[in-house]
Image (cartoon, rainbow, N blue to C red; front, side, top):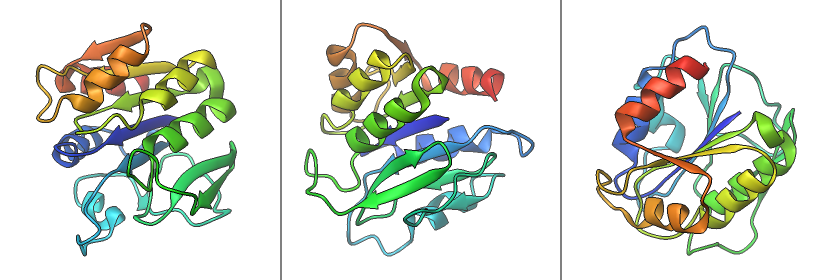
Length: 182
């Protein structure tokens, strides 16, 4: 499983990354993208045109299917019940965010362990930093966009400060690594 957290400045990066993923991949992707509640376009609609893979906003207890992109909806935390099933939560926002990157990353870390890659992109708060700690603690990998190229470097910088075991990469390097992984 590849999970991605992004906030301010991250939507265009996310589109560029997912556009490079071949349609025949067996890899699944799960995304939390912080967006304004006033944005009327669904999160899934935002990515469908940029991606060759099917894009879904998962519902509670929906099955996880390989070769798909799942993006958390605007009013729920997205979690993994197990490797085969999503869960949704309306618990309090974390770092002012619901969906929360920390919630997704921590949940995925417990379920996927060393089979997990977590990617942190541009953003303007520290959401994701605690989740990155969980990913590393459970044997997964963390890739962080270089704060030097991030439009909003707070989120990548916070992730880097939280853990020593991450790879700091440009978006171009992340895309190259993703293409090798999928």
